[in-house]
Length: 283
Image 1: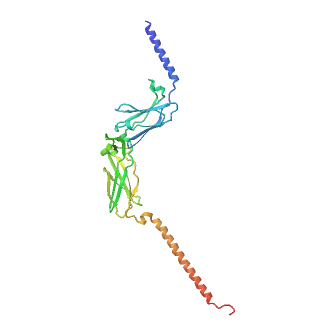
Image 2 (image 1 turned 135 degrees about the horizontal axis):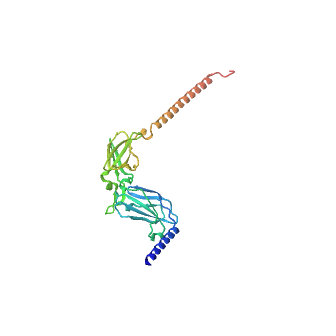
Image 3 (image 1 turned 45 degrees about the vertical axis):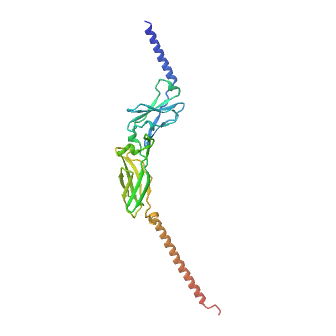
């Protein structure tokens, strides 16, 4: 008969102690402005604010994969989570826990903030293709370029390229135009080479970017550097018509000045000759 009241008093005491412990441990601030930043599958998680007297621990939750912890007890506000996102078609969320070092041993769940969902295959940005070489011979422009690499490796240790992951879902688009012109044309390939017909008397500028065909957003990758050919480049192509107009104006001015000076010198010479032929006064 005495057991039940004793058990009730024990539960009440535990509840009171729990409330006192909670009152003595104020809730820690949670992360805000959580963003995913990913280029070629290298993915960085960022958030705010900078912690003061507490730390952050990141938990990555996948739809079908086990929860994994990263950047445990960090005082930073960013975390490289690339290595736990290897299943690039999985959709992940990040839980950013606000913790103290002493609270890690506590069974109580720390406060945390949850990120937006992130699917690397759909959301990573394609980096710049690397143009290895290009030639313009007669009416043919040939361009060879290299796929951007990812942080992920094959079993032999070599790095996978974005083509190894996206396969036939990856296209490259070339934008090209005559030098000194604004009218662009484009061409598409699934290989690492472009060969296009051009005007053999003109120089061309161009850049390349990758495209993921299955995407509705973030389809276009970063643009490569802009390069220009120089085959058959003449002075007019190099400097433009404006420079020739300036040179022509200067030449006309010099010729006009020379003519004016010649006329003045000629008149002075005639005047001097006329004075020399006049008789001296008093003679």
